[in-house]
Length: 451
Image 1 (cartoon, rainbow, N blue to C red):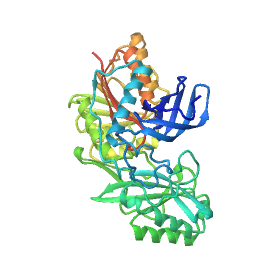
Image 2 (image 1 turned 30 degrees about the vertical axis):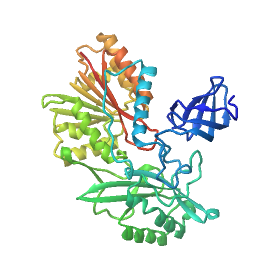
Image 3 (image 1 turned 60 degrees about the vertical axis):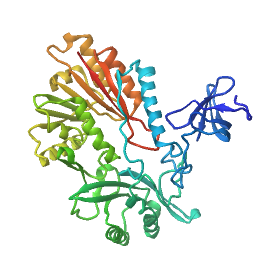
Image 4 (image 1 turned 30 degrees about the horizontal axis):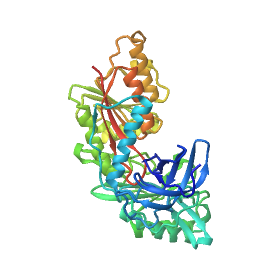
């Protein structure tokens, strides 16, 4: 057990951005707010047999990478945990997390470490889900992220990671909700920002637990006119989302480097950080080295974020996604961009793939894999099964190269272990993507080659 007057040296950060140290007995101590290299005294707030959680009560050595947090709500709001850590140091820690996961979980070491993908550290979050609470004891309505490790909503006047014009809406939104008849039945507002016709389009999706009164609808319309936003309403699940009024200019996401535009609905999955995504798409295509004669499969294709740019270069791209609704929108996006003949899409549950599915979709020269946090285990396992028992898929030729875009280093490491140790691939390149500055979220990209 950590002694109250014991000085602990912080060795690293964990995936929750907590400092990691060991006490005099060798027990792991996770320390909220501590940074690598610092020496601190702590107060233990939670004890387990193998570890303790603690907070800092005194510091005698401060990290050279510690900076003043820019946001006045840092420490209370749970939206960012690393604002007190220099952004370059954040990236270095994420790179270490990626490499440690690949080695310790997958026994894989990339032959080359890619230069990190970085971009704007502030105002980058083009999608967000804001909680709404009417709290009379705090003076009225709160709109923002949850407090750290709490279900309470933080009392936020602004947010430094939201675009400036969205941050400026927080206080007006509080006043709007406070004026509404349904103020106690409006749990959240989802924000989505897009580009269309050379202008920024901002959509707000209001979740409401009961039908809105006509005066409330008029209040929403007045707010939309004043602040140049679109209101969408969500009375129940995501499938019930619809615009309050007719939409003249739809939300759209553009990749001008590839002459691609993708309209989307505000609840569709799109990358939070548009600046980084554009760089990521470009790097993924360069790493794939696709030629005009090649066929590519884009697994977990979404709305076509990678599929459509790939279709500008490849002979054919097959995008596969789990949702029939998303697949239909992807087809519409391909037609809008004049790529319907080179990009086609199919719906399939990608967490239940088998070798027979790989046979059905046919051979491809290259694969792009971009799964959710759960990773692409079934896909990797199917490739491994074919490599171990070629007779199970007669005539199937595995892709020569796979570019794997990951939002979870642990599942990437698991899948990398399968690809390298059981499917005949080498991990030739890997690196981090700082998609979410000031958070402990680790996005990455890895390349697997087969001789």
